[in-house]
Image 1 (cartoon, rainbow, N blue to C red):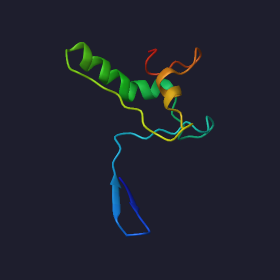
Image 2 (cartoon, rainbow, N blue to C red):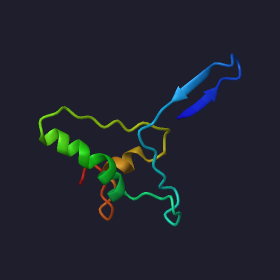
Image 3 (cartoon, rainbow, N blue to C red):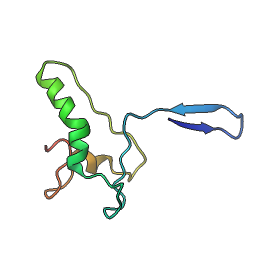
Length: 83
């Protein structure tokens, strides 16, 4: 959970995330690759869809933060859609 307080009115906004992944530095111990993201998120969504449930994956973030790369990836490291 992330809490942000607005300086102009001291209003506190709460943000909750199911998952947050770091892929900024491939040498970092915290770096998550596309395969791991698929295993943590995509696999369950695919399994639910095959069982007949409606599913959705929403990638949200700042411009340039990696949403498209997470979804499509590259030939060497395919994203969620390509798996």
